[in-house]
Length: 166
Image 1 (tube, rainbow, N blue to C red):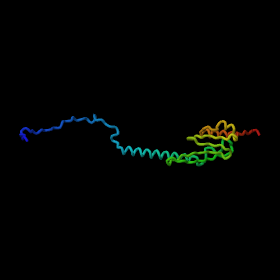
Image 2 (image 1 turned 30 degrees about the vertical axis):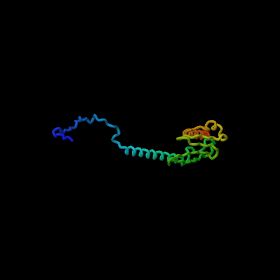
Image 3 (image 1 turned 90 degrees about the horizontal axis):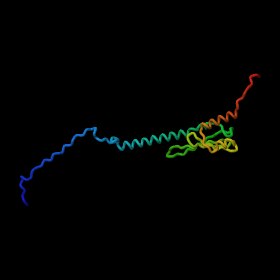
């Protein structure tokens, strides 16, 4: 081996390259970088729990809506029968989904709940042929049912006129 003279090996000094300072406003900010994944998951779970509570509460209100009876007492078709409400409750993930059916105890007319304050009428043809042609199989609102009942009351109990000259 050939000896290398000590004078030929020179120590080298490595200096770091200076990096210019950046201004804080010039830094690119990532949106949402301050929110952790755990916080996002917790927020989503809380939102789902609140949605479940809201849907459960709404379903229970619909179940209890006709507990004291229907919005009208007498049947608009036969004008003599009383209306009775039958509520059957199905549950989807524990959330109550009521199905209400209103039936007359005199004629065989039925009201089936189709939506929020909307009903599909099944009118008995023999009890009232005129209403059968107008309402059978049609969806009507509770407002129209109340108006129909008020009209029937007015027709069933006409005003009386008394003569004052007697």
